Image 1 (cartoon, one colour):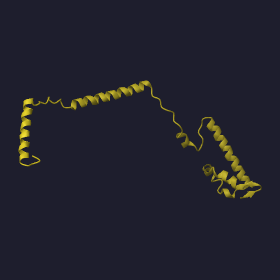
Image 2 (cartoon, rainbow, N blue to C red; image 1 turned 90 degrees about the vertical axis):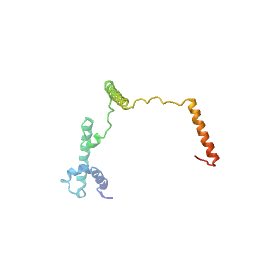
Image 3 (cartoon, rainbow, N blue to C red; image 1 turned 90 degrees about the horizontal axis):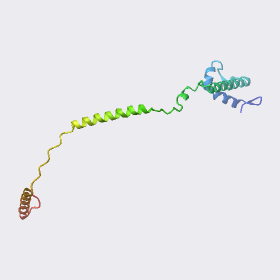
Image 4 (cartoon, rainbow, N blue to C red; image 1 turned 45 degrees about the horizontal axis):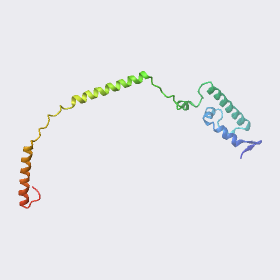
Length: 146
């Protein structure tokens, strides 16, 4: 590990580099962070801590934090509530749509077909006798189908 005057420089560098997004702003000032002295690294860490504390103070007042704009948009949304009048309007519109649909379906439906005439008992008996005669004739000829 790199050590200068009893200070863990590697740890200090990691702490400064975790704020790389903020360091982009300072990149023109600090062109190469590895070339900084221990005193400069300490000062950079102090400045980062001051920035964080100021951002925390801003956030507690209700302001937005500097680099966290996207996170605030994705936060929990309040549940939307609908008034009773709004629900009533929606229900009335739905009932009107269904009534209109049913009226159209009733108009498109064909008129009820006339009642089908049925055979009388005598006519059914006559047809049955004719069918039996046909089958008797077919069986006599040795056929299994007509």
